[in-house]
Length: 303
Image (tube, rainbow, N blue to C red):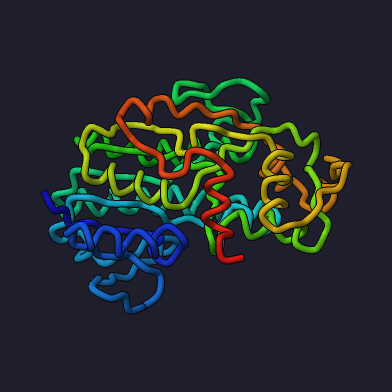
C-alpha cells in the first residue's frame, strides 16, 4: 500500500537520497524545510523549530513521518551552547511535530526517527543489543532525550521506529570524508588505542532500512543500524588506506592529542560500540554490504 510520507532533514545526506527511492516505490513525499526550496515531485512546507513555527498543512493526508532533522553532531566543537543546540534541534523538532499532529488530528500512523549508537556511550568490547542500557556522556544523554521525544508518539497510538545509526560510509559526505583526509595526505594512523569498535554501515543499507520500516509495519522500536561485522578503528583506517593506496603509520594518534584538538568532541572517535544487529537480521533484512572491504570497494571504485 502506497504511503504519503513527510520527511524532515530532507536536504541532508540521507534525505536527498531517500526521496527518489520512495517516489520510485510509488509513495507520495512531502518535505519540511527551514528554507524555501524546490524539489522535483515533492511538496515543500516551511518550519522553524526554534521559533516553534510550522505550516500545519504539512500534515494533510500524511500517514508516515521520517524524521531526520538535527544539527550536525561533529560539525563544531562542543561548547555548552553547541551541545544545547544539538539536543534542541532533535527534541524540540520532535515535540513540535507531535504537537501539530494532535492539534490537526492528523492521520499519522508511523513515526520513523533517526537515532545513533551514541546512545550506549563508550562500552569497550561489550556486545550491545537494543536492550543494553543507556550509557554516560554527552552523546548518550543526547540520544536518550532524542529517543524519549520520539517515543511520545506511543501514547497517540503511533508506531515508532528508532534507527540507532553507526558510522555511515558513503561516496559523498558523511564521516568517511573526514576519516580519509589525513590518509590521503600520508598522515594515516589509528586513533587513541585503535582498538575501539566502529559500527560502520554503507549508505545504501541505511536507505533500505528507512524504506523498509516505512513499508513494513512489523518494524517497531529501536534497531541498531550498522553492518553485521563491526571492526575496530585501526582495521577501518587500514582498509581505507588500502583503497587509497596509502600507508598507515605504525603508531597511533594519542588520546590526549585528540582531546587537545577536538575537546569533548573527541569522544565521537574514541568511543567503542560493539553493536549486534541480530534484532534487524531476525526481521529477514538482507544487507547489500555486510563486509567492510566490499563496502569500501563500492565507494572507491572510481578512484
